[in-house]
Image 1 (tube, helix red, strand yellow):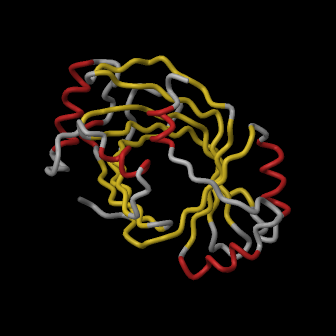
Image 2: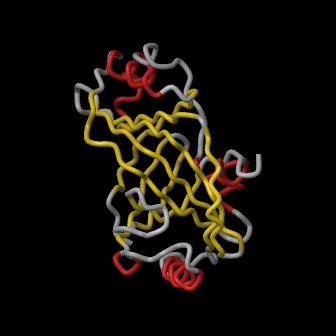
Length: 221
């Protein structure tokens, strides 16, 4: 595996009603002095799990250590992979790190094509030999990027959140939309006290939120 992000970092999340302008103003007017980092982009992910749904169970059971496996690419096309990366996201309490693999051999695959999905799944399983993985769900959203005035805190705001599912490796491109906004702050451990002391302009309470769990539990509701 090619590790592009081994350092542990905090990732704090907040979930808000669907009012992007309000969140945007709070970030810019907060004590952190957030400013736009670079242009918005579409984020697409396929989540993988084993037959026992171990990743779901770890999250719902409140395990201190969790791992999510996803294939991620960027762009408006929800179905055609563009420069995809296979990410193993490991979480220890509130701290995270990623193991990331560039996947050029999967470029331009169409996830609506069953044969191409079979190939994709075979390739993904070559990177994980503990259990057999299968594609379970997808998430799609628009992400905005911000950086604090001291350049030590990154923030993302996710909107237009949609989910869809796989059934026996067949993709079901029926999207369910969620009218919510997910704010996330990412930073090194040494800045955690600074973050917690200056949150009042944005929110006093963080939220537990997992896009993968949303895609699994909320798809039918």
